[in-house]
Image (cartoon, rainbow, N blue to C red; front, side):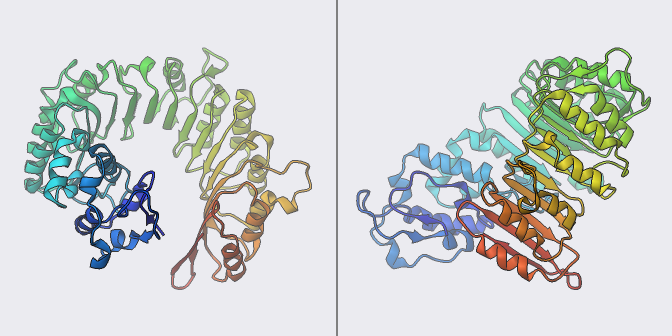
Length: 505
C-alpha cells in the first residue's frame, strides 16, 4: 500500500499513477485537502490514500476536517516537482497509436489535466513552462489545434521536444488538422531540441521553409518519411544535420543505402535500418569517434571482410542493439569490431539459423574486447540448445546483471543456471540480479528451484509460463519467496482458455 503520513521526504511518482484525467480531478481535490497531518511534529497513524488516488474512492469527510490544504502547506517548488513527476514519469499507457495529444509518446498524462483540478493548480501549471516543453500529437483532430497553440504558448522560450505522427490512412480533414498543427510547430523550429516525425508525403511541402541553420539547437531526431521525394527528404535532413548540437539520430524506415552526409563524427547514438556495402558501412563506423549507442538492422550487399582494417575499435560504445539480420551479417559485424566499453547487447530477433557460427563470433567479440557485459537480451526460435547453454555459462557472460530471453526456455536451460545442479567452484552468472523469461516451457517446480538457488543475488523475476497448465509447485514456492527486496511476477497462460494469472511479491 502507499501511505502518506505527516512528514514524508518525497512523493514517489508511482503514487500519482492515475487511471484517467477524471481520476486526477477527483484525486486532486482530495489530495489538496489531505496531504500531511495536522502538525509537523506529531506522528499519527499513516492513512492509506492510494485507493482514493487510483480508484476514485472518496476519503471520509471526517478525515478532512481541520487538515491543511496542500496549496497552503507546500512551497510552490515542491508542488511543481510533483506536477513534473505526474506529467513525465507516470507509467506509459500500454495502448499506443490512438488519437491523442499528450506530453510524450505512450503517455497518459499531461499538464492540461492538472489545470482541471482547481483554479490554483491551473494558474500554477500555466506558470511552469517546462511542463509544456514536450508535446506529442498522434492522429490529430481539428479540436487539437487550439490545445497545441495553448501548449506552445505556455512553453514560452523553453527548448521543445515534439512527437508528431500522421499516418497514410488519415481522413482528409485530419490532414487539414495536421497542416495547421505543423504550421504552429514549425514556427517554433529555432527552439526544437528533440523532434520525432512520422508524417505522410502529403505534408512534405510544409517543411520547405526549413533550411540549414534554422534549427541550430537540435540534439536528436527520429524520422519516418515514407514516400517523400528524395529532394524534400534531403532538404529536411540537411536542416537537421546542420545543428552543431546534434547527437542522436534515428532513421526509422528501411533504406536502400546509408544516409548521405550526416555529421557522423559528432553523433553519440545512431539507429539505422539499411542495406549497404560492408566496406562503406565500416568506413562510416570508423568516423564515429563519440558513438555510445548503436541500434542497427543492416544487410551487407558484399558479405566480405573490409580490406582497409583488420579490426575496428569503437572505444565509447557501450550499448549495441541488433535487429533482424542474417547470421552471416552478424558474424561480419562481430568479427570486425572491438568494443572495450560494451555493457549492453540486445539481439531481440536472434540468429536466423541454429548453426554455432553466430555464437562463436559473439564469444570472440567479447573475448577480444575484454568488456564487462552487464545486460543481455536474446530472442528467436532457431536455437541450438547445447551451443546456447555453452555461451550462456561461459566466462564471457559472467558479469551479467540483467538477462532477458524470449526464446523457448526448457528444463535444460534452467538447469544449467541452477546453482544446486552446478558442481563448479564458480556457478554461471554469479552476479545475476534481474531476470525475464517471456516463453518459459519448464516442468512444474524447475523454475522455483532455480529461483531458490539464487536468492542471495536475485532481485526481480518476470516469467511467462507457457505450454503447461499446472504450475502448483512453482506458484506455491514463489509465494513463499515474498520478501521486501525480491519482486516476482509470474504470468500463467492456460493452454485451453488462455486465461492469465499472476503472482506478484
